Length: 138
Image (tube, rainbow, N blue to C red; front, side):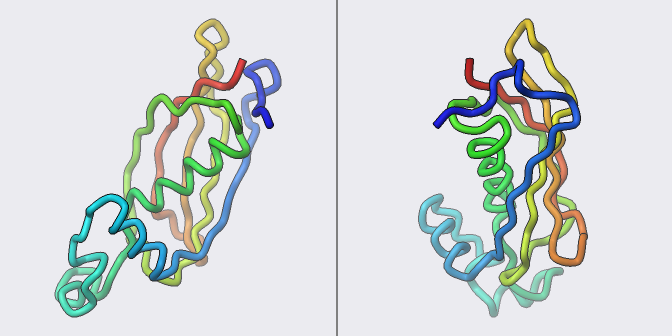
């Protein structure tokens, strides 16, 4: 299985992935990374925050972008070189998040592409925005 090469990619190409964030996702991510912040795993403490309940890790949401890049556009064999991220709204357990990417720049001489990265919830609210730099497979 091989992803798209830079010659097969065009500015404006898009791909997306959607997933409902579960309590299990949050606990597994916390265990894997060691990020046991009460905002993610302790309902009583999280209720005292501005979010008034638990939220998913921002980087868990960013991982959905990685899924699109690594599996669809450009896909398998691509190398994730960088990501600018801004977390603009919380993701709560039970939210359905859609991660979307769009090719915005091609740097053929360096075999690099830049893609806008946006995650929205089930209400269409942006929760994450950014730009990824990727090296497509040769």
